[in-house]
Length: 497
Image (tube, rainbow, N blue to C red; front, side, top):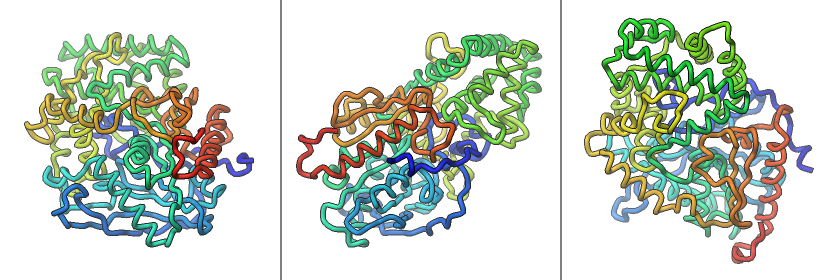
């Protein structure tokens, strides 16, 4: 039984945001980055390994190569067994995932070789000397998928893997999309894939994001939603008064006084407050202060304080949990930081690269344009599209963004993606599930929709507090992998998942 494989680990840390700096409040919800696995284990982490990767897979005349980082765990591998591939995403690849995580229980069960590849332009995988636009033109999901295909052929030779060794891809969030797309683009190399929380549909205005956040708060109590709406309504009125702006500066511990004549700063401020709720809902895991959806709603429903004071109390809690003295929200400061092209920049830890990918491929902008938006109306789509232009230059017009998004959906099929031996896993309170497949449309590619869980929940180490549906989901994934490994490469049409 698979039950015996899952050793409970204490959940002791909140999933990290994309950027370490609190100034990147604005960035943190335009992605759904998979965080570190929970807990600390007394195991030796695997060393960095490197292999030669092509810079441009689609230009035969470009022979430039660079060193791409990867990790290997061969603890349970038996020659002739499968290879499990964890795909890196929009941040530095963590060797912690090589000693923790549900995928390693599957690897142990099936005697698999476990490998993780870091995404180009993230972490230590630096193809070029800087992050200029001339360099970032080589940062794309298409190049990343080709990287993985090249890596598979490299490993097959390096480890002398038998012909038709079966590779199973694993990914959460953006890598969840990559896992499904890898199976779609390179079915002769990848036998199956587990795609967790993968947004498959690129979209400019991701208005559904805050609808899911609102619905998640409502699962605690409709009063929580009402309290948030009341607070933001009052704040919206206060944003018309200079004296009230000073009150907001003090109440929300802003690093600089709020200038209500600056529409970009106002948008950034209101969006940052909304992000306090969005980040907690997206992960809904205890941090050092035990910050969960229940925590937020307990604060917001405390009628001993006025709604705005409660809203500020949430902000105080998040600042303490982030170990930050004040809320940095100034738009121009963020843009100037993101313009920095150096690998030594604070934004080189993923901020400049990922925002570029949203402008060049995906969009994914969580706007306030949704009707009856409880977090205010101050951060519309224009706020985000202007950001692309302000950071990367005037050529990144709204028209170009729309064209880029259409290209991505044409390239991969969006929600009409046709694949076999892929399981799509989504959580009901994960805002990103709205852009993914969460209902089974084909036995060849089943969907698992886990009530009550959020972003990439099934990938983390099991806990005694896991919901029954989450436990069942991990069982189902293990079962599917076993069935796929028994399937013949040459009989896709006869597979019954």
